[in-house]
Figure: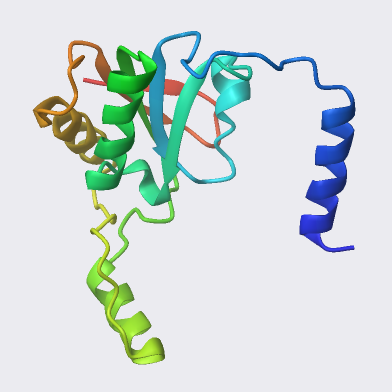
Length: 163
C-alpha cells in the first residue's frame, strides 16, 4: 500500500465520524496564517485550531509573494478575516537556500527556467520581518493593524514573536 493509499484510508475513516459539516467559509477566529510547508510545523496542534478556525496558507519558507498576497486579499475581502499571523521556523530548508542555483539546476535538467519568485533567505528573523512588511505594504490588504510574525523552534516546540 502506498503512502497516498494510507492517507485515503485515513480520510475514509475520518469521513465516517465527521461531525463538522455546515461550517462557515469564513474562519471562526478571523485569522489568516501564512506558514512554511515543513511537515514538522503542526499548526493545528501548536495553535489549538480545529476545522473552520483559520485560513492557512503554506509554502516553502512561509514567504510572502504575490500569490500569498492574493490569498490574503481574498481572505480579508471575501471571507472576513481581520488578523494575519506569519510563522517561520528554525532549521528551515530554504534558510541559506540559493534560488539562482536551484533555477540553474532545474533549467539544466529540464531545459526550462522556472518563473517563480525567490523564497530563500539568510536571516530567519529578517525573513519574518520581510513577510510582515510585504503584507503591511500591500494596498490590497485592508486590515493591516494586526499583522504579526513569529518563529517556531522545531526542537523546543516554542513560538516566539519577532518584533
